[in-house]
Amino acid sequence: MTNDTTTSDTATWVAVGPAGAVGAIHRADDGFHVELYGHRAGRSGTYPSLETAKGAVHKALGPLASRPEFHAH
Image 1 (cartoon, rainbow, N blue to C red):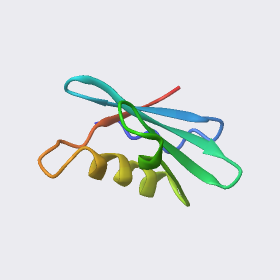
Image 2 (cartoon, helix red, strand yellow):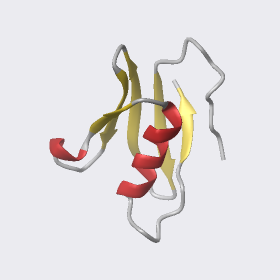
Image 3 (cartoon, rainbow, N blue to C red):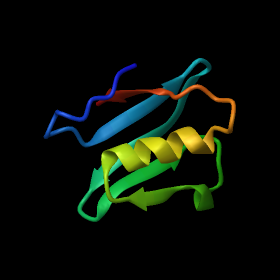
């Protein structure tokens, strides 16, 4: 599993599961914005830390989903 949290200049992480890209996390001044692919806009949110945002992406995938890999871009 890739969890790139040490790259200070990274602004985007793409969440990749077994079926492909499932979402993205974008760094912003007010925290980390989660974008879930294929979901309505209301399912996104802003989180105070990268780890919290990653957990939100995982939870949104459902109770039996594997934790996605997060690739810095």
